[in-house]
Image (cartoon, rainbow, N blue to C red; front, side, top):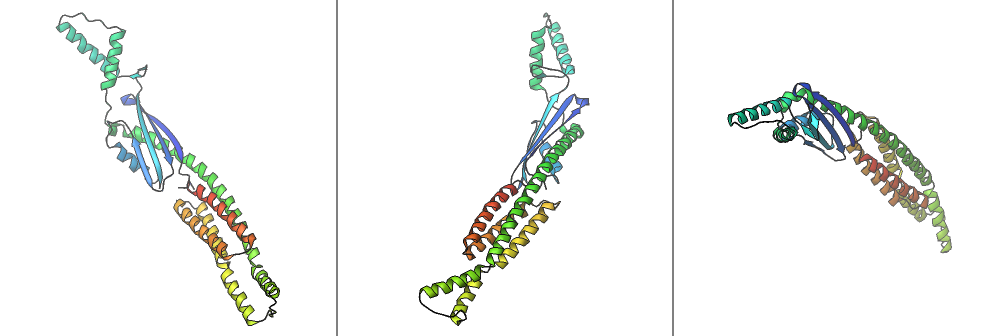
Length: 293
């Protein structure tokens, strides 16, 4: 089991191009898979490649991928430039000054202005030239976020198991109380008839028919059996290596339906309380399931 929420970071150096690539991947809850890629505008088409790399790692959720690139050559006051480009630009400026018979002196102001100019106009090589480095950083970020999602998934699995045990205890309590429901109703019916001074024998056909109708209407054995089946299947989903978040969400709806039916069929206050507590516990399970992939 994996959580849908997580964070991963990976980096790699493209030494031949003097670039450092850093990739961050974050994921949030979402019913379907929605991947958003933020990368340098020069790298058109990289978002499609990132979506292809994501296949098999995410089945659903909102995934945000941020790709940053920095120069590893020179960095000062937020500036990054190519030494070769600086030399070429200075040489062109010197040649221009000589052709116009102008004095040409290189000072710190000129270098700073030139660095700013080169930074603003500098472009990145085609991302395909750096695909190996980009993929390396991407894989590292994927491994990082996958480890985080797995750890959180293990915690979710342990929590869900405990909450399911609590629901199963409530199911057993309801089953125990239901065993006495018909007998209690029979005694209550006889006492009411006596209060109305209607002396009817317990074996009277009309009394037996009324008890039989009540027994049929209040029988929750099928609901309790289905609840037990749903709990067992839920535990199987927790232990499964497959993506089961949607299936768990569906089971929560079915469990809620069985609790509702049980409550509507039952009159004893003990069963009503157990049903209410069960529905509250189920709601907490449903909230956790929203985090499961």
